[in-house]
Image (tube, rainbow, N blue to C red; front, side):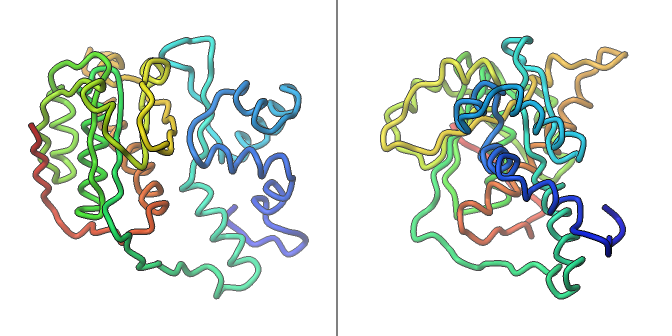
Length: 261
């Protein structure tokens, strides 16, 4: 997608113009899904849904990852950054003035309340909590919890320190927060998705299928590279999550102290 095609619409426009592919992209924009879930939502046969998912994967707009809870399942994820680049290219192909982005400065009247949940509350969820707080500041109230809490992983601290974020966190059991009201509840691992309790107030519940970095050691037995990759993926997802809140994002602070008992 690096050159403008004068003979027809850019690849993204051709892909997204199919009604079913557009519907699949819209569903995946809200969170990671399994094929059978997409089949139920769009009301189309699995072979047809799988065909269009392959098209989107070939265009590198959608990625697939085996479930860390049940290896027979695969979660599909829409790469919003790739979509943003493709949309910008499509706009530029029509007219260069359409490639610019207008930032909406609206601010919510009250903070958006977000809960991240994973199994151990030792890596994925506290990292997500810290990254969202770093990006959104007082525009959000963000928490994290686990179904089987355990101590904060030192590589989680190290990975965020690289990004200028000081992470200090005490593990929290998700049951201790189940009476609280949240606007968003985001599960970060496939196992906790199956046991996450319901919360009052009908929050928006989405799932990000992220493997446990503590179980992804490299050839030397080191897990830190997996934590670094996780920090990058979380930050990318959170960047687009904040756009759904309608709040201005402050990324000017180089340090962020995350302390919560």
